Length: 310
Length: 188
Image 1: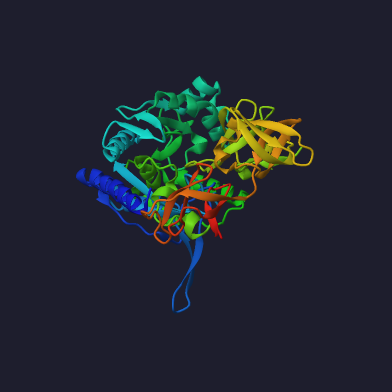
Image 2 (image 1 turned 60 degrees about the vertical axis):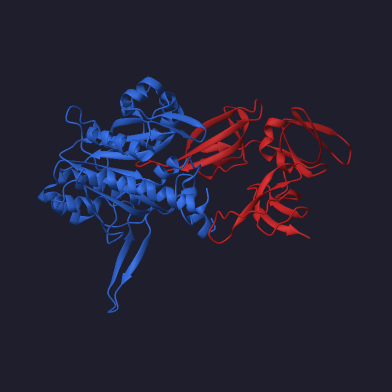
């Protein structure tokens, strides 16, 4: 793909995302990229820098790994349905086909909704971006007609790997998923949703009322690629604080950069987050699929590999 | 037993998978939304040439195949076999075409390379890091694919097409990286 094609396809996909949400009355928000406390992600490393004022004040400063914490503060303030398209940063990852240290993230939050509603949003958004209900990616044909298959994590592990997912260690989860489950689910030639993750992988999602061993979270996959990660958001601030502390300890154990938990977010949650579901989607991956490009770097102008000579 | 951390697997390695040597054609690091990172590896079986995908945890140890390398010269292709010769003792050995097909554009007669042996069997070929080849077709039109370094596609004497700077003309010799198929320089 040449540079003008890559600029054009990116512009088109981002325009499609904006118009999809604006037509439904979602607010587009713009939250900080430089923050004093980034989100707690036990397996991700952050870019740290320092803020210095001319009077000599110094503050630790971080590039966001996701805009989620800031958007949640806006939700508490009553912004309602909203979306953001922003740059996010992750350090100490391989620069690879699907990963760039700087990447574009789309998040949207639907108030009063649960994760099942967001599955429908994702289906409709993806169809709007592609423009038809069939697509070819790297020589393989995919059927995008609705609805896409949905399978719970427990059912998928039982059916395809003959394992009880609650007995699978977190660190083995994706190895089993990609070796034994994903290839079976991919046979349908359709994108698919995998939902209800073990609570140990819940992060910011709320437990299921009917079975609190699982959390209301889904991921969506196409062509072996994870396209989005959604939660019915946890609104219980005590539980959130407990999980933050647990994840902070995990970060520490893995020798990741240490930083405090976001007390402002806990304070905001105390005053009441509405019932809301949100999702994070890698925009570069959407563009890569729409452009039928083999790697995300083909859709990024001046990709990290090129400018940093990696 | 020599092993490698799965997080460090790279294209071009020979590893033991399910007890048999396999060639790594692709290794994609992947960090899921939540959870530990994995390495998604695409193998080629050196027995059957079949492609197999497997996902490892990045902290797993994977056994490296004990490969012996012998310096040889490429002689000719005989259907599904590539024939190589040891210039010192004229020993010949064949390697299945399917195991070298992605590098076929570099095999010009008498090119020096290393044939890889596992348990006495030839299972692959390693090329020098770069090879010099003559340009036999070169278009005049120019289509830039990068802001600061416009390139064009030319055909080399082996039939392989590569991207080179726009000043390269038909009949010139160019040095090409055998790993990335990138242009490295012009040979006068």
